[in-house]
Amino acid sequence: MFRKLHDPGPATVTVHIDGRPVRAEAGESVAAVLLRQPEGWNRTTPVSESRRAPYCMMGVCFECLVEVDGQGSVQSCLTPVRDGMSVTRQQGRRSLSA
Amino acid sequence: MSDHHTDLLIVGAGPAGMAAAVTARRHGLSVRVVDDQSAPGGQIWRAIETVAATPRLARLGEAYRAGVDRAAAFRACGALYEPQSQLWQIEPGFRAFLTRDGRARSVTAEAIILATGAQERPVPFPGWTLPGVLTVGAAQILLKTADSVPDKPVWIAGCGPLPLLYMTQLLAAGGRIAGFLDTTPRGRVGAALRHLPQGLGRFGDLVKGLSWSLALKRAGFPIIRHVAELRAEGDGRLESLHYRTQDGREGDVAAEVLLVHEGVVPNIHAPLALGCAVKWDAGQHCQVPALDRWGETSQANVFVAGDGAGIGGAEAAEPRGRLAALRVATKLGKLRDDAAEAAARPERATLSRALALRPFLDALYAPRPQVFAPADETLVCRCEEVTAGELRTRAAQGRPGPNQLKAFTRAGMGPCQGRQCGYTMAHIVAAVQNRPVEEVGFYRIRPPLKPVTLGELASLDEQEPAA
Ligand SMILES: Cc1cc2nc3c(=O)[nH]c(=O)nc-3n(C[C@H](O)[C@@H](O)[C@H](O)COP(=O)(O)OP(=O)(O)OC[C@H]3O[C@@H](n4cnc5c(N)ncnc54)[C@H](O)[C@@H]3O)c2cc1C
Ligand code: FES
Image 1 (cartoon, helix red, strand yellow):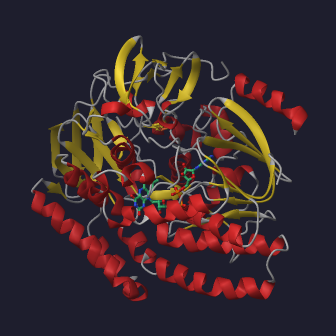
Image 2: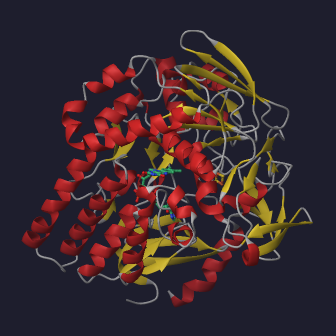
């Protein structure tokens, strides 16, 4: 959906999205990385299980929820990438108090 | 100043929060600034410190570049700055609860300035929940923070200064635009011009606005005027886009990304949760906190500054931040009343100059009626997937208010707490029940301001003994 305009060079880190290693730039958000992936979505909804992707990128829509390093329902637009981070797309009802 | 306590807590490190912090420090207050971003700047100057070191700075324009000095002054002012910290509750007295990196803790302060800014007005239409539909602001955040642009030529729909600014920035960065669906209704310019005399002092801004349009016209992409209705379609992602103009002209285009924008509205969840009085702003079609001339809310020692106080732009946000800080300094005994009044005078003059053009912009870019009356099949509540049709049916049965409708339908009960459906719901209720929207009001907002996990609560307990 989106593409990055520059090569991060030495600022490159690796995150794992559903187990697949993906290059990212230190400091950018997990949501920005997800929007560059061919799948183009990050969760399915609890009600109709339809696919959703980041919508606002500023913390007010909660569409960008993913699991990060085992913790569910993390707002990926507010979460900077870290080298070695594990990101999992979130399916259906994922308890918000997990 | 202990680890947990400061005189003043400022929430938000945008133009308003940074200006407030610098002023409060100058008058000897201890200040903590918390912000959910990883660096200072707020929306307008997001990622300014990182970008300033790159050639990308020039592509984002002069108004963006102005943030370099502001961030530097803020860094040097001696406020305790806590990035990546999301505020989710404030108890009277005041104790504020924050989460950083999945761990929560609480801090205390004598006074609070909420400088939490604005969010984009939600733009509901059939298919707006499909992956590939984002706000213009979201795309601009991707450009500023991740140097990312839509892969293919992008469709943009909406009105207001932000789409024009983003399109200019996108072209300068080498992005491509498939077309602009301008949703400004016919006849708006004439209506807006009536508000201009007041704004003549800001003629420079107006010319700047028009020159954006020229740059965009030169780029040669199609501009379709007076678009009234939109529909996004696709199987699990956006594939095509249907539009209809006020004159009934229709079109279907293939699209991978559609960016939408219909103005911004104040972030009022924090003041609402604190029980601060709010009122309806008919010119901006949203609720704003009721404030005195320093920005103090109906709750003593709670202030709102910046676009959270009513949309005024960054140039209004800064004087508003400084006015609030001056008043806090007076209330906490660091500044005499007459000295505060004297210092406030130039700030008020700056503020009224900055606001002079607002009535014109508000009238020109008022949201088109369809934003508040989406087609029945439209999901109004994105979180709980409640349609406009369902809300209309329920709203007709026994004249329920927003909170009853929420209980009946679950609209507004999801994690976004009505940030995406609140105004649409209010307008639907108003239309069905034939009441003015200002009388319908908003959902009752209770803390926490975001869903809090058991893990966060557990980390809070670990802190308590030391508090
Ligand atoms: C997406 C978007 C993009 C915009 N882009 C521009 C632009 O390019 N140019 C322009 O002139 N105007 C822009 N604006 C308008 C904007 O409102 C500016 O006028 C200006 O940034 C307002 O300054 P402020 O200090 O009031 O708030 P902001 O700059 O919005 O700063 C508020 C800060 O508070 C933080 N915050 C909010 N809630 C919490 C919380 N609960 N916990 C912790 N931190 C929190 C936010 O992350 C933000 O950093 C934009 C608005 C939006 C919504
Ligand atoms: S994209 Fe809206 S909250 Fe993250």
